[in-house]
Amino acid sequence: MHLSTARRSFLPALALLTALGAQAQEAESEAELLARAKAIHGRVITLDTHKDISSDLASEEVPSDPSEKERFLLRNDPTLEGPNQVDFPKMRAGGLDVAFFIVYVGQGKLNEEGFARAAQQAQDKFDAIHRMVRRFPEHIGLARTPDDVERLHAAGKLVACIGIENGFAMGTDVSRIAEFHAMGARYMSIAHNGHSQLGDSHTPIEPLHGGLTDLGRSAIAELNRYGIMVDVSHSSKATMMEAVAASKAPVIASHSSVDGIFPHGRNLDDEQLRALAAKGGVVQTVAFKSYVKGDDERRAAIAALREKLDHPRRRGGETISDSPEAVEKRRLFKEGVAAIEAAHPPANVSDFADHIDHAVEVIGIDHVAISSDFDGGGGVTGWNSAAETLNVTLELVRRGYSEEQIGKLWSGNTLRLWRDVEAVSRRLKGE
Image (cartoon, rainbow, N blue to C red; front, side, top):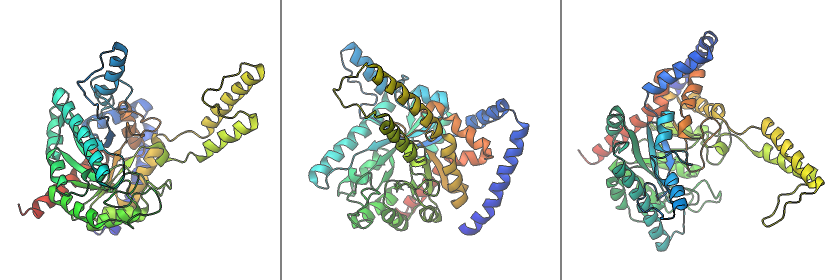
């Protein structure tokens, strides 16, 4: 079926689903709705395509000072419930089964020194993920294929996959892609914040290359050959559209939401969504609050309150006055901020689900998935750690999505695309 025809036929179906869902909810108590969501959540495989890590993850080099040791372990031992948004206890508590642990490198100078530094940063992150899997095999396994994901999940283990954020990590040597594949990487993005040697980023707005570079095209060809998914999150629109056209395999946007709900440089507009889907791609909508919902009104209101009360931000080193006037100003400011927060609440799970709805309406249920960007700035009220993952499923159930559709959003679409990428790799290698 042609995409536009499929979409036209899907929209009435979605409207009917929503109506039926609303009728079902009228007859369903909150407890019954939650029980149904829990049952669905337990049966589907939940997969988050973007979770950032520290290079100290699972490190065995622990500080000797007792207080430093405790803080270090809470941040870096994934078997402990610490301050990170994702660790094994939180994954178990929230029913998050699978995560792509990210080999992230920040954008540096496009020279040999910059490339060497990025290569080392990437190696440190690869080492950390492999160390985690090696140290805690009773908890988690590394998946190199979709079959591995399903096998490890069936065995009751948590599942780690590996994605690379920023192709800056490969430098100018496309042979590094074979090495990345051997270390388990199964997706790689073209850029992060800042233009890479492969193509322009969404920021800065002023382009460096005008889109995808020749090296970027060569990298995509090699990624296709090795069965590594091409990731267009963080790319400029020109880079993204050219990457989709250049790739022989479907591509992903591993952690991007939609411009049709909230305009932002990191979000994909409807033209981009359609281009992605036309090649069989998937957008993994991301629960990153500043991409999900605007914050300008809240910030402006707080700034106006400061001006009204003559209560500027305190500079470092300034002494807090305990005069009656200063105490009263602080009280009024605190009350005012609370009122502003109530009037302009931050993004929540419902706001995030609006992005999922829009993407589904534009390109269909088979081209949409879910990501968090946890421990890299991600999270919304209601899904601010892996422990709250059930809340996403609950919101989808509220909106009338079926168990089959929820399964597609959580993992089915991403695993299908991954298999498609593997099939392209086999064809290109003549296997």
